[in-house]
Every structure is written in structure tokens, then in C-alpha cells.
Image 1 (cartoon, helix red, strand yellow):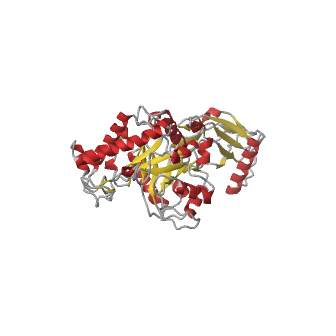
Image 2 (image 1 turned 90 degrees about the vertical axis):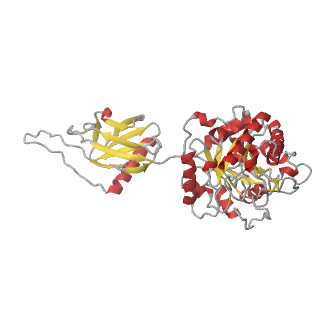
Image 3 (image 1 turned 45 degrees about the vertical axis):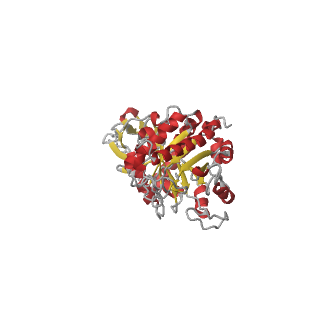
Length: 467
């Protein structure tokens, strides 16, 4: 009954739009013999030349100028072929699509001559062709292989998280808040206090790793990450890697202008740069193994913003950067650090710094101070064209349009993470340098934004034994 009502409403709407008001008389010959008359199509839900047509399964409705009967359903063809059913209800022909159409595809619907006939005179309809193009849909991973982590020995938990991220990519985006600064969830709590939604991902940074555990932040205490994981959330860690200002210096920095660290020299085993690199990798691996032992997978985003000239890893050139990344990957593999989802971070003009398909699971873009979603989309399109087998997110950004507006512009984001503000006083009206509470409220209110509660209810993630 509901389907019949829907067909009737559709017909009435089409009629109203086209203001169809036709009264035709059945013709008779001189001997009062009824002559066949041709049913004419007066309206249709998809017109010839339509673009952006929904790919979802539904009814395609053809309205005739009189009551007709179905004669040859096979005379209706749709190519490329999909599963559909043809029926008639009085003066409308209904093509019911039983499966979705392909995205951004040219289709041809043909209503062949003799598909229907005039109910009174048996006159056949004329042939009608309707060409249309479907909408541009969300990005879909091209093969199942892309849904497997690059590390063949990845932990069960890491693979489950990665599978989940693929399952929502193109449909939703995970919220993430960054530590402020150090090893805390202060901005996560701030977002929750004023929006009522706790971010899905709690993000940390090994910025002060060289001081841990005796000074600065103690990264051996994994309580913050563990609590978020046990609550059902995901954990992300950046590594803005601080190195000595010189071979004998006790001061550390990430800024290229402050340190004499020359990344090109890591190829020279035994050089002070090589020694610093290996010491840093050992310490990072030690910390990450603590998380692995606790069953916690990590969305791992080291040496971010690859070609950013402000950082020592960004000024040495693509070859040295790639060497550092691959050395890190190989060393971690040797140490059994298998709980990582490897995320390469781009600033948009540094794609030659990409470490390689076999070293990267996901890509994030860092972009700031843009007024319009189309500006973000442009950069996303560039990354997606080069890395079509990788999910893409936004991380380490500031002062962008709301995430829903960026999704509306057809950029697909697996997760988003604005920069934290170390001066945040955590009030509702604080003028955050990168993402104000007004921005967070507009973003978190959208149904496509996933927060901690969504993750708790997810079947894939709920299967993980969260120690």
C-alpha cells in the first residue's frame, strides 16, 4: 500500500510541475472500428541529459497521457545493466531499481516501442531514450588489499582499528583533539564540557621524548592513553622529534634554524647525527612497546608536515626525509613495534617526500587559515589523485571552515585533528588560536562526525579485548 501511495504522489507531483492537462478522445473509423492510438510520454522523473542523478535504488517513473497496459517489459533496457523490475499502474510505467547505480557513470534508459499499449485501442508507445549521468559518490577503496596494514605482522587490534576506519571512510569522519601540550586529554575534556561530545581520538605527542622519564613529560606512564582506549576511544601519537642543537649540546629543538643537525648525515653510520637518530628511535620504540603490551594500537604520525621548512626533517630534501622514515619503519619492525597505523603528513606541496606505498597506511593534510571549503577540497583532490589507495585526513590544522562544510564540498576525511592551544583556559568563549568552541559546536553537531559514543557502539571495535 505504501508503495502504491508513493507512486500516486510521484505522479501527482510530476503532473503539477508540468501542468499537464490533456484530454484525448479515442478515434473511430468510418465503420465505427476503433483505430489504434499512440500513448505519449508527457513526463518522467529523469529527463534526457540529466547529471548528478542519485545512485540510490529507487523508482524511475514514466507518465503517459492515458491509461496503458504493459506488453513487453523486456523492451525496457538500462545500460550499464542493473537489476530492476518493470510494472504499470494505470497511466504510469514504473522501473524499480533493485540495486544502486555506479557513481559518476553514464547510463542509457530505453523505453522500447511497444513496451506498453493504449488500454482501449492497443496502440503501442513510441521509442524513448533517456541518457543521464549519476552523482559523484564517496571514495570507495578500489581493492580489499588496501584494507590491510602495510606491516604484515600488525597486531590484531591495529588491524581491527584500520578495518573500522575504512568502513566509515566516505560516510563519516572521526573527531580528534590534541594534547595541550604533552601527555594529557585537556582539550578532549574541553570539547566534551561545552559540546556534550567526547572526541573519538585522543592525540598525544612525543615532543619531549628526550627528557622522559626524568624530566618534562613521563611517557612511561601510559595512563591517559590507556583510559581513553579502555573507554572505547582510539589513540593517536605525533612525533615532533627534538634533536640536539649540536653534537655536544644539551639543548634540543625541532626548528631547523636552531639546530645544526644535518639529516643528510644519517646515511653515515657512526656520525653524531646517526647516533642521535638511533637513540631517538630506540626511545620511541621503547615507549610504543609499552602501549603494545597494553593492547593499544596507535595511529602513528611521526615527523609531520614533511617539507615544512621550519623543521630539521623538512629542510634536508625528500631523499633524506624518506631515508629517515624508512629507517624508522625498519627499526620498529625489528623491535616488534607492530601496533602502529603509519600516517604520513603532508603540507600539500611536498608529495615527492612520500615514503612509499609499502611504508604508509594513511595520509593526512595540514592546511591552515582558509576561508572556503573549496580550498581544502582542492588540496584533498591533489592528494587523492596521487594516493587513491590511502585514506586521507586533516591533522595539525588551524582556522578552517567547519568539518561538515568540508564534507559537503565532497572531501572525504577519515579523521580530523586541529592544533591545540597551550594558552587555552578551557572556558566556552576562549578565543582559541586554531579551533574555537563555536567551530567545535558546529562541527560536533553534525551526524557525520563520530565521537567516543559512536565508537563504543561499533561492532568491529567492540570485538577488541581492551585490556
